Length: 453
Image (cartoon, rainbow, N blue to C red; front, side, top):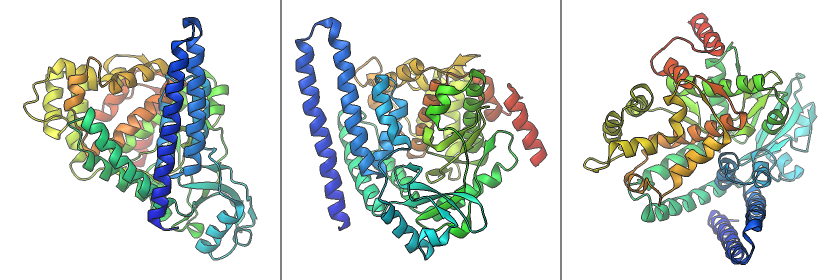
């Protein structure tokens, strides 16, 4: 099938999914209008569950960038009923896999022989299937337990198609609500980062780089890469045992959840602020947890590297919100980097109240992340007809910020589910201003940095 045919087929599937759920929504509203008020919440929940199951089934089969969008939706949107969230959460690691023969053909083409010949032991049933590839467990001829990620055939055309659809979607949204949004630059940035994921050689290089950068780290573990069995479409890494996020969430102690949440948070801050390179895909399927809260970090396909001057341009806005907590300073910083055009006429207090919604934990001495906080802050950001409509209409998102923004929301959602309490402002100042450590993990990281030179 040609690339154009793949794009057309995927576009039609998106349209059908949209139309199907649009009809379902109209029918739901009609039923709701004639249902007693005491039963409307149950009706709303059933609608959300059926819709979520439909979206999870359709996007899971489609793979590519649309499936990645579904993954993001599955753990960020807290307003959905629990059953609806669980339906979408299957996209995190349990999407429908490709047939064993198809996976075997990819391995043969990339490594020169059938997987049963290349590896001492090969499990034909994948242990996880996600947006770009699926993972098989194997043992190398040297006796090493490994995870082998095999790319779906044709997923490149799928991602290009999805990003073409995303471009049209951004333009549509911009026409009605986000009139200041530079959609072309935004989609170009997304396209570049997601296309990077198609070359597993690049991902292997990223993972090796992170492995070196975090070597000997007290609470961050990066699996080793088996370069001998890694190519453009096959990536082989050290096998890591551990709990998936749902299992850890259901069984871990409060102390372990605190440890895991802070470890994930510090991994992001150290990467973005000290290394100038960070993982842009923070969904829960990319972590493995031990009972004590130790975390192994997986999947380095979508990585953002700061170009010279990018972080320095964004930093003043963050400092204005967190260090100075100054609306006037924030507006000036946002104007200088392109979040706002000069002469916008907006009230600085209104701008501060809107853009700082996800950064509330860093404006107080201690804060507990909760699902309610994530839900409420997201509701503030997307309420285009609400009290912040004038701010939303004039805001732009610089392309350099789009991946970091995704990480901010992703990590917030994870911390909200873990219900982590900490002195977040003091912790962030460790990275912004080289402030002294404010937690035991901060002390352990400082000792590691000092020993590493």
